[in-house]
Each structure stands twice: as structure tokens, then as C-alpha cells.
Amino acid sequence: MSRIDVLAVASEIFPLVKTGGLADVAGALPKALAPLGVRVRTLVPGYASVMALLEETRTVRRLPDWFGGAARLIAAEAAGLDLFVLDAPHLYRREGGPYADSSGRDFADNPIRFGALARMAASLGQGLAPRYRPAIVHAHDWQTGLAPAYLSYDGGRRPAVVFTIHNLAFQGQFDPRLLESLGLPAESFTPDGVEYYGDIGFLKSGVRLADRITTVSPTYATEICTPQGGMGMDGLLRGRADRLIGILNAIDTDVWDPSTDPMIDAEYTAGQVERRAANKAALQNRMRLEADPEAPLFGVVSRLSWQKGLDLLLEALPALIAEGAQLALLGSGDAALEAGFQAAIRAHPGRIGCVFGYDEALAHQVQAGADAILVPSRFEPCGLTQLCALRYGAVPVVSRVGGLADTVIDAGPMALAAGAATGIQFAPVETAALEMALRRAASLYRKPATWRKLQRAGMAVDVSWTGPAQQYAELYAELIRERAG
Image (tube, rainbow, N blue to C red; front, side, top):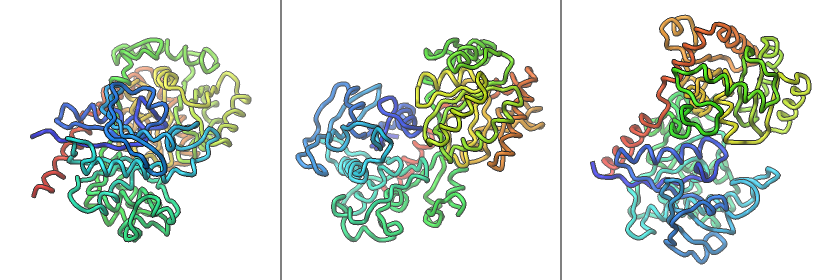
């Protein structure tokens, strides 16, 4: 099969800019697709952090007035990634993160900022760059959801469009009066177009107008078609179920490799899991926990939010402490949850340690040093934390939802006997069930031979992009055949 050219478009990409798993996927998938004959070039916003890391830049097109200011399209490379960068200082060069200012307030002009990105993706799909015309535009999450709309309403020849939902909870709904500013025609504002409950729906646009919709795990693809998991969009998703597929996320196993990881104290393999003890001691020291090698050490690397179930963990802390366990938490988010964990540190000094914020190196250290990783999410499209935990021999303790259900095999009697168990699942997603899961984990931890079997079984799981990349390549090829036929 001849090479397939894909234009990906994403609002963040690791290692240039990251707030969550979307960046990891956008950064890792192109590399995994390359050996399969798929060439991916990724369009990203020209945030200051991105511009600072670009290599071998070339201006493709100058844009005197692009959504309210001068801009240019740059072709560049960075960290082994083949990029287009929309360098629009009036939209992307500002204090704060990709979506919000330093105080956490969303930028008021986010619909314009990401409408501009989606418009550029559509223009590139239609041949804006000389000698470049992709067969596929692959748009990621609500920030790029208008790309299928621009391509649909522009008319003429266009590439096939894949739209990936990373988290249905973030839908990008904005004032309908912005339709003209976004350059969308009046006829697009209908239920069959971008209109969504009276607003302009960015994610809704992607779901309605893309040729294929993917999401990041098979179970999540099923959940979002139900009233309980569909967040108001289940009817539309059921109507497009023949165009919806769940392809499990993965991790970059070059970045996440305990045998070569420069960010951890002691490197190790599945045959050397005893070497994790040095990482546990280092993590206890970093988190100001008691130097207790026998205490089960639970780790958390997460946004502090209702979705992630961290309020349930706060309620379950007495059960964790009663088991003689410790907690090492890295994360930030909801102020009330941060305050709750700060109070827990004061109530249980040496047993609970927290770092509020995000630290990539510390995330690796938690995975390498914790005995178990907690992911008690109320819903979880895929989750990458548990995949890293499997890779690092930290036994995942997860709620039975979404991608967590797809990736962790519960340590029930039959799975343990067969050597297939890789972690602990719990349901329903309630405090009592989480408490029971913590007790189960602590009990298994006190059986060293059983715990080692869990660790080694988890480390044997293929969490790389090899399988998922093959599924994406097949999906792209199928769309090209449809267009040709």
C-alpha cells in the first residue's frame, strides 16, 4: 500500500506542551504510525512554549489578518515530530496555560483561538501548503471540532475526516453570535450542523460531521452511547454508532521504560522488581513520609476533580491509614480537594504526602516507587496512569469504568490462579467499594509471592502503540478505499 498522508490537529502535544493525556497521544501516535506507511504532520498552536522548541523552521504562508491579527503558518520539526505551527501571537502568546490564564480562568476568546486552529486544519486539508494535500485530517477533541464543519461547508474536494473524542465531558459550547466571527455560514447553524442546544457546539460539530468518530477505549465507546454516560450527546452518538469505534490508547514505551528511565533512582526490569525498593525509599523521602519499607505505599498522579473520584479517596483515607498504608499524591485542580488533602497531611504526618502541581519527573518517580497506583475515576475515557503503572510494576487499583475496565484484569481467585491478574477493580464507584479495594490491595501486598506475580503479569502487558497504531492505519486505509470506491 502506498504511503498515507495524515494531517493531525491538536491543541497540545508532548513534549512541547501538555496538560493531560491528549498531549501524550498526539506526541506518540505519529511515531507509531510511521513504520506502517502513515506519515503524520501535526498542526498545533504557536504557544510560546512551542515556539521556543522548534527546529528548522520555514514559513509556509503569511496571513495578514487571521482571526483578528497577523499570523503565519510555519513548517517545523521538534522532538522528532513533523509539525505545522499556527504562529498567531494575538491568539496564543500569553501568560497562563493553553486554555486558561494563570489564575485558572478560561480565556474569553477560546472559541476564536481554537476556531482559528480548526480553520487552518481545514485549509491545509484543501491544499493551502504547496505540494501537500493529506488524504486524512485527524482532529482531536473539542478544540479542533470545527475542522469537519469548515471542510463540510466549504464545498469542493476535501479529505476524509477522523474525529477523536478524548473526553466527552469537555464539549466546547459557545455563543451563537460568534458564527460570523468564526467564518461559518448561516446554514451551518442547524441540528445537522454545528448548532447544539442553541449554542455553537465544537465537539458536537466533530461528532456530527466527521466521516469516522473514534474514542479512546472500547468500553468508553459503549458508555457514551447511553444516557448515563453520554452527557447529553448519547442520542447523536447512537445515531452515528456505525461510524464510532473505540481504539484503546497506549503510552510511549520509550519515554515510559523503567529499565532506562533517567528520572528514577534505580532502573529495573520485570526480573528485578526488588530494585523498586530503592525508588520507594526515595519517594518516601521526597514526599516526607516515614521511611517504612513494609508499609503499602499507594500513589496518585491525577487532576484533583470530581471526575477522577478524589473526593472518594479523601473519604476513604481512614481505611487506608487503618491498613498501615501511606499515600503519595501528585496533582492539582479543585481548591476544596487540595484543601482536603492538605488537612489530611496535618492529621496524618508521615503517612500522607502531597505535591500540588504537575512535575513530569515526579510522575515517573511515583510510578517507580509506589506499590500501587490508585485511579478511582467516576468515568475514564481511557486513562494513561494505569498503563504507566502496569509498565512500572505498580499494581493499579481502579474503578471498573471506561478504559480502566479494558486494561486491568481484576485479581479475583480464578485470574490469580491462572496468573492473568494485573490489578484490582472495584464497583460501584462509591466510597465503600473503594475502601474494600484498598483493603484487598493491602491484603495482597502482605503476600509477597502473590504481589510479585501481579507485578510481573502487569509488566508483561503490551501497553505500547503497536496494536492501536495498526487499528488507526487500517481505519485510514478503509476511509481512502471508501472515497475511491
